[in-house]
Image 1 (tube, rainbow, N blue to C red):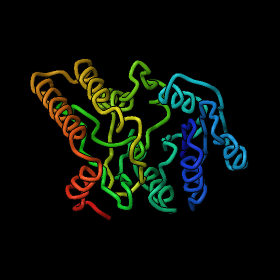
Image 2: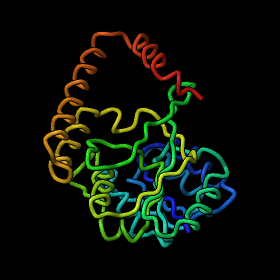
Image 3: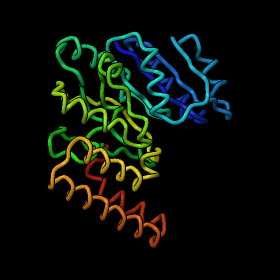
Image 4: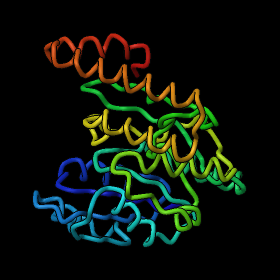
Length: 259
């Protein structure tokens, strides 16, 4: 019923935690690995766990969304889920619980649960909101969602975007009036400090481009410009404040979501 796609590149220890999380699920899935020709020992781990992997591609590519598209083509199940190397399922029962929901909601196109981000020694609930005509940035993570393969086949992730192709994809589906189902289930625990976290201003620039393409109106243009302005201010503050103080501030504002 579900194919899980892992994209990796030089993430040996992170990949190990992700694959262990998947194979520990009480309900099994098709596991597909797309590795960008890692040089740090990740491929050794892939070979070590080869008996659990249905399909593997190891070759250089042009980025995460190119790799995700490769995985989509290999998937043979109705539903697709993406876990980045370093992300794990919330519990060993996650796939079993989601599978029951998918069976009961066959007309849904995208099913979205909740995710946590692991920061240091605590978990912060990842923001989630419903996508609509006034959405200007990602309102859920792809690690919290399950998407029908036929839609990903028909609408591959647009690789002109380096950081926000998943946001573009989901907004495209919304504009096509596809059915989004939001469920109160914990899906994943995501690693902090991913490519989007480290390139926030570039991510927001892509959001703006996508908004102009798919969700353009005067309010949305104002909103995304405001978000970019405040993000630039935050980046300046980070340069001026020592890291340990920044971490304390982040913890203070996140602690209400601490698990």
